[in-house]
Amino acid sequence: MCRNIRPLNNFEPPATNDEVTAAALQYVRKVAGTTKPSAANQAAFDEAVAEIAHTTRHLLDALVTTAPPKDREVEAVKARARAQARYAR
Image (cartoon, rainbow, N blue to C red; front, side, top):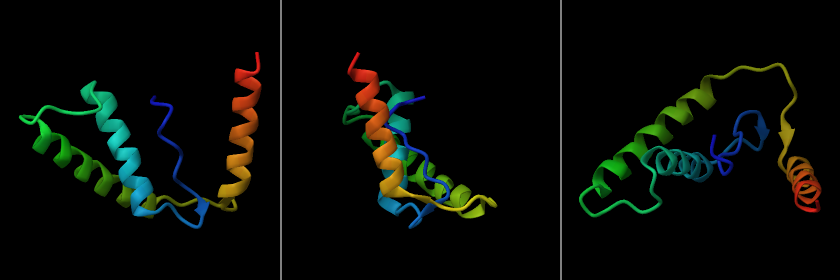
């Protein structure tokens, strides 16, 4: 899985459309094997991003959990601590 795609479910406040689109873009880039499509492929690339973002939004809206929502700031601190431990070696 692409490291740049972050979990988006069960956060307070909920994931924004920009975050969903960014995750879709990372996914399409990974699958396509390119970060910048050629002019001939740009329309297909953009359409895929839009469709995946749309489907992801439906998924996030449909998911149900009994766990309390995660705090973005707390999760960011945890991620920074993991990165520091990983790269300090």
